[in-house]
Length: 249
Image (cartoon, rainbow, N blue to C red; front, side, top):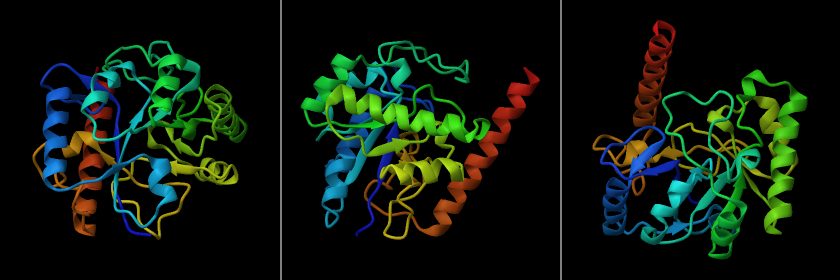
């Protein structure tokens, strides 16, 4: 299997500003133009997994936010949506959601089914978007099993992909995802390679790709180990600063 990038996004913003959860439509369009110039081929997770000889980028959207409909017409191919099943058609205000995250509706089942008919892959993102590090094994199993079954019942197709809420993937969650024969996706930066465990695969954040910097070409140029170490360190520092601000406030 050749290595390939899986890219994670959330919502689409009408402003020129980007955040960890919302990338501007303008910046996304500019990035897609860069991808086209660099001959990036896009696939859904389902299609790239079924044809492992292709080098293709997979664009995935966590939370199934309704704002992703703003970018559908500009994408070169269908993408993959990870659905929080208890919040379909509801506001994205699940327990634990940071107060600074933009409030918006999640896609309805009708909208999800329409995208699926257009070729989009539908994956699970749990039922209620909990922090798995704070859950017991029974709750983790229910979140994975029930969200998978709900999606399969709604769209009439097998649900083969699971994105861990907040990218948190404790060993028990990885074991359950593997038990159900699903691919598991976290937020550890990097390309998916032949040695990566299928129950916890890396992804690259669109927030890092649309900005100038060391990660801006990672959709078409595989990062080396030093770049990945630097990215992980920056994330660790950023997370620490956010925690300090949260405690101080």
